[in-house]
Amino acid sequence: MELATAKPIPFRALYQANYKGLPINATGIRELREIGRNKFVFSSSASTFFTSIKETSLFSWNESIIPIEYKYVRQGLGKDKSTLITFNWENNIANYNGQSYIIQSGVIDRLAYQLQLRQDLAKVDATHRPIMDYLVTEGNQLKKYNFAILEEQYLQTSIGKFKTIKIDRIRDKSDRKTTFWLALEYNFLLIKLRQREPGQTFELLLKKAEINGRPITGS
Image (cartoon, rainbow, N blue to C red; front, top):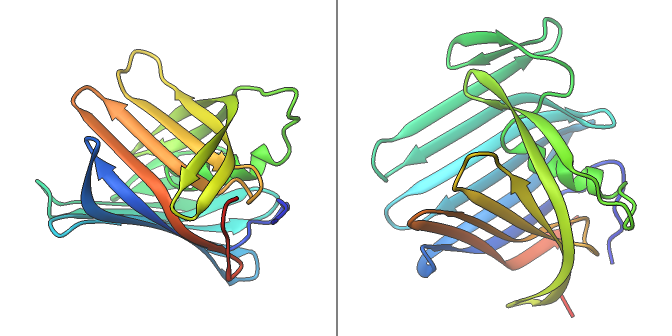
């Protein structure tokens, strides 16, 4: 069993991706690599024979995530899209595709917040589950993401059963619902993700994973 620590632990996880409840032979990959002293790259990708989406977050670590650069690239489905956000912490400025705006300490990007959430969960008392919130860059603006920590659940996967904590993102005036299931015994590794909105459902379910180069399995 891997115990959560203050510093992020490198991992690589492979997921089955489903769209609208139907397997479409899609693959999702999430990976965290340490590329220097307290410097990391966190990436998330999903691809099929007709489309691909990839997000990448470059950040440094000093008791929490300090974003350096965020990239998003979508190709092959509808109109291609590319986003680049860079962070200048000396001047507290973020630059989005050439547009600059003021940020503040603690701001995080749309991918790295998921890793910061995992790190923060390790410090939460199991008997007291607060609403967790993050200030996240979305394009050229900042948005607050709020999360409710719900019940513990066992989830069955192709590599065994995992004890997880279920977490919902709280959205006001939105039909979109995002839910995460994170493994309690493996540094809150993502086991399942589900995003629903009218007429659309997207899911990721863990197929294979390793932490610090060691394969993991459920019970």
